[in-house]
Image 1 (tube, rainbow, N blue to C red):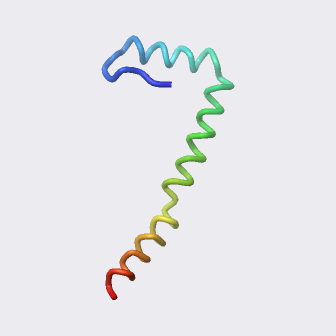
Image 2: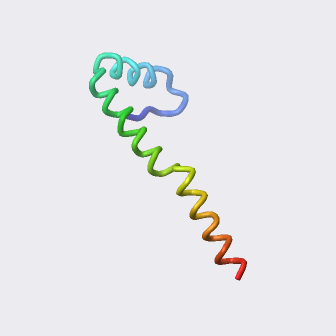
Length: 58
């Protein structure tokens, strides 16, 4: 779901859709959470960062 930046009417349409389709909203929320957990896992980021530091210090 997307809307044109600064388009209040399109944003309202998206919000209305989400309110009218709670099952879809829940699914999107769960998928977003999984994506964020995978892409922004602080332990994984720290491991990669320290690995990069280690490589560049030698």
